[in-house]
Image (cartoon, rainbow, N blue to C red):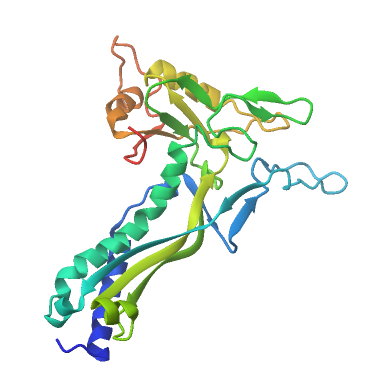
Length: 297
């Protein structure tokens, strides 16, 4: 192939298509448990976290519900994924063999938010959320000032982690904050530094964003052995949460999230018709099992 502007434009267009194809083939999991929040600055402050809005009968003037009680912030980070190809390979018409690599870049871009979100999930026992407590903790303060009580969203135990999540609401347990979507860029001008100095054409993708902790009330974790007893106890605790005014949050423990090694135990708890002793499984089909390879196993 003759290396000129027209031919390089054709290759770049083809590689851009491969990148887009890779984006479309991925099936990321973060949307299932994280709220997407668009970002317009280097850092976003989530003052509204912990405030649960409610309707009331309109008697007299409106009562304004303050959304400025907390100062939990998430700073954006910038990420890149770049490959380079020897100019000689392009010149020798080998550009087609690199299309799968570029397509993989697209798939990587689509699943990279999973890496960020589930890194937050896996560290939720040791990372503080909006109320100053660890996200999964035994003493979240709930109630009006001076009359707060401690509420737990951690059952205890020392084994592998499993979680009950309420994913039915707009505000989910975790946050994916997107500042700039992933974009594909080519550096193939003959005057580009990499081409001139090292005889390399460069293609890369980059994006900007981060993940963080949302509403701890939407999640309940356990490290106890997963069986009908621990599941039903966790479910009862989770669905008993109240807001600061004492009103029920009406939590739905809709999903049971487990790492791959706990899939069988989870299915036995929520899909088996009968227990090992022959009794009916009254917990059957109360939660959807989600097997997540991103969770620590």
